[in-house]
Structure formats: structure tokens, C-alpha cells
Length: 244
Image 1 (cartoon, one colour):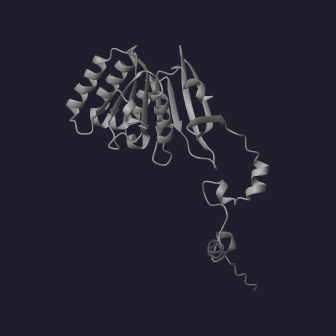
Image 2: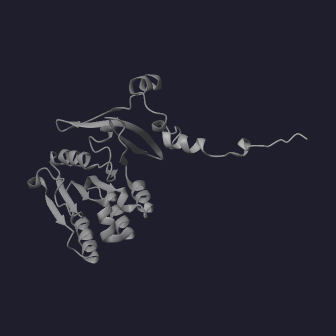
Image 3: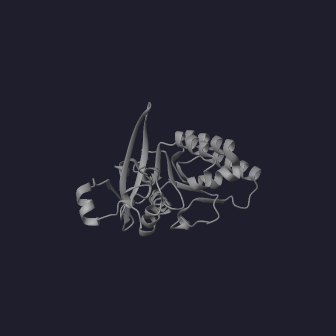
């Protein structure tokens, strides 16, 4: 289960990948709340313009850095200085990785992430990655994912149940891939295996149309039927036979 890999700093670098249709801000905020409950220093790098939207208690953040008004060179230097100054056990939060990419560009972002993951002072790194902002730059998603120990992706909702998939890297090339249903109840993240759907029962209870089960229209509406009846097909051509 996902919750197994979220506790006890088993996963050092956690990425939550989402998009506009399936946002992951609730999960991100839940993980930040858990981070704030620890006794570690919290270093928050704010690259998105919704400043501190995901911080439930700003007073518990040890250092908050706002990069939204900095130029790219200034932001890059500030990130390097932050990493160089870390000397106590801390949790690094990046909000968000997509905005960081646009501010620092791919090479600098990747270099900073590599350095951060190698610092023993960082017990955990949390970040949110908006994939729809990087549609033309899928490489950054691939490269950042390769650095992560836990990559969570918010999947399309199926019925009332929300779903996520995740890849947990155990080391030495071993990895665990799972897809689960999830919800947050009373501030607690709850995940469970995806329930198997009995197709026969689903069809009986929901009585879906054929078109809803296909990626293209199978059934014809009345207009389509009328148009079809008026169409002359090759094998319907009239043949006049004259007997002499």
C-alpha cells in the first residue's frame, strides 16, 4: 500500500504528478501537514504564484523562500546557497517542480535536484509536478522521475473512487508498481486496492449504451438511419431487363 512508503522517510524524494483535470494539491497538502508534524527543519521553495496555498500552518516552516519575483540567475544562485547552507536534518518542499523548471530551465533544475538528493541532511524531498505544464517537455518528467524514490501519479477518476498509481524504487534496480484508490478522511490518507468490477453486474445495474463502452459511435440515431436509407449503395442499383 502507498501509505507504507510514505512513513518513516522510506522514500527520500517524492514526486506527485498531476494535471488540471486530476489535481494532486490535496495529497500534496496532506504530505506537507505530515512533514510539519515532525521536529525537522522545513525548507519551503515557492516557485508557483499561489504563495503558501499548500501550507496549513506557515509558522511551522523554518525557512520560506519566494522565487516568483527573482530572475533566473538570482533564483539559481539562491537555490545553490540554500543547499550549501543546510547543516541540520531537514525536509525540502518544492512548490512546484514545473514552475521551478520554467524559472531555472531543465539543466539547472536537474543539477539542483541531483545535489539535493545526495545531501544526507535532507531526510525527505516533497514536490508537485504539473504534467500539463510540461506537455512539450516530457524529458524533464522522465529525468526527475528517475531521481525519485517514489513517483505518484494522480489517475483519472473512475466513478466515485479516485485513483492513483505509483512507482517505488527499492534500490538495485528493483521497483514496485501499483494502482490504488485513495481518499483523505479527517486529515488522514487512506488507500486501498482497486476493487475488481464484475462486468455482468455493472451492465445490469448501469445499463450503459453501446456507445458509452466504445471510443466511437456504434449505434445510429434517427438522423443517421434516415440518411442511410436514402443512400444508394452499389449492390442496390436498379437493373432494367428488357425481353425481346
